Image 1 (cartoon, rainbow, N blue to C red):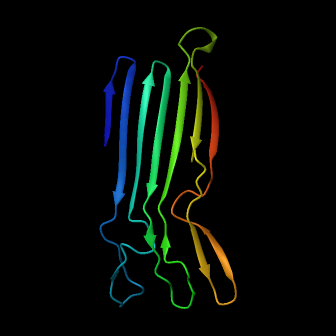
Image 2: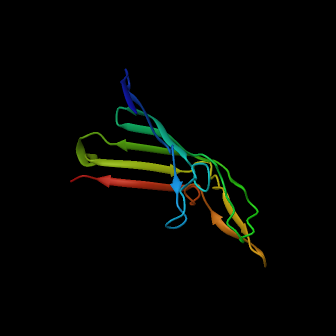
Image 3: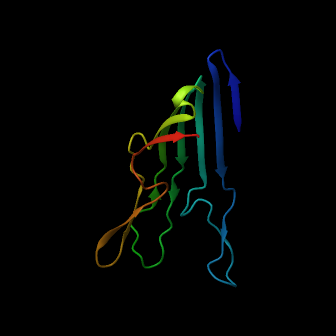
Length: 156
């Protein structure tokens, strides 16, 4: 879904995209029955929504990314102690300034992108085997923390 509204200063826009899995049948091996796994071992709801503004040569946008939490079904013999992966939501910011089309700055643009503004850690996925507990890492989203990128572009 996308909506753009013209304003006295430029424009405002809104975007939403999401996905809901309605079914996830899984068959362990040929000949075995299919088992519904919609709420197990993977997020079945995710979305990305943004709100932006264009003010003359300045573009500003904030984006919200979300992945729903999900249940973990332990595998036989793994000794899994975790039963749930929590939801993961991050906020991203984007700014871009395009210089006016005149003089030496014609075609120059500066941008700033900050992903995961609040440096939120994704949920951990923990397993415990028979000998020792170990962390298997992160899950349910991007694993990089806050990421800041500055860009310079020039058209000739």
